[in-house]
Image: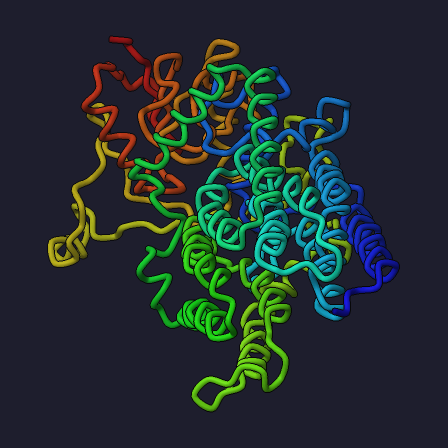
Length: 541
């Protein structure tokens, strides 16, 4: 069985690491031109952690600590936040490089292996979430890292060894990979574990299973000792809160539509065909594992904004290595070797837009005209190395309802099935949803709050998904609050004021928060009402 040349694989990995890192860091700053809200969410968490706050203990988030610790490692050593984010990707890439090398060399054919090695490392170092849009974004960086690890674990579990079997190394890497999911984003652990466990058990790879279980047990015990039992209870509590939240049951397309709509039906068909052809190729254990793994991949895709099917990358490699020899398996007149070859080529074409967006993002970052960008955190001069594109940040665009009382359009309101206006403590909030201009929105509201002369270090409960005003003024982060709202009015018990923007970034989330406040025991009194927001004082129950 041919396998990749180890020197070529190593060369590809080193060149990819150095090339993507250099292009990403050439400007000395991190440039953002898409998904600014997700970036502010990330910054909110990172600066809380820099102050010594602990995720889950001091604030709510469903993400694991490994989503932030690589960045925090550099941030607490004096790096600017932009440099800390860029260097964190390099750190993760360096840590994963040996595992990518081993997986490529031990499981794949030469051409497929060279592509897999390049793409998996480029995935870690990308400056885009994927898809086909060319914007620069650090949004959902943890999903890219998780899919790089997921690709390694899937191939180690499903692909046969090419040469001498090394079950101890396989098991340790599988155990570390699955543990990594728990500390990064538990969705990947829940979705991928069943298929991986089934194929390992059906193939009777007991040494791999044993090594994986022992590795996972050591990781769990170590985490329990380092982080404490209360941390894990709070982590589970955050996950349960988010899973039952009305705000974000999914990140975009509903699950049924994801499987059947015109833009994704080809991906669904590919998943079904992979299972069918792998089964017809005689790989019954692998096919049974895929019958659980592929739905898990669909679920992860459904949970992630953009619904980018990154699971296709390891599946392309898996189809190639599980092909029977030409003419060896013929079913209903079709050579399964040809069928899998054709399907893998079609899958490459389906995934190509996302793959090129990811791979080219460091080059696009390097080619940007930095004069078109401005600091994302103007109040924190030491962190001016993260910048937002000026036109996007300051183009204040909103979606508003025109059929309000007193207008010519009001008579159409009932026919349009409009909801009742949102009212908080007697003040009606306009049905206005921001479409762009987040930087201007944060700056302007923060400047007006400064004129309100509130006490220093006041804590704000904001009725919107974006609440990072404490990064723009003399405020404190909301203790026990959630940087991104998931439900339950988290942090309200420690808030000094409630801030209700007149134009929200997600009006559906604002409506849910307002409804929860209205039925709560808190008494709100409007103390400042202008075109930007309503500020309420709070009487605790």
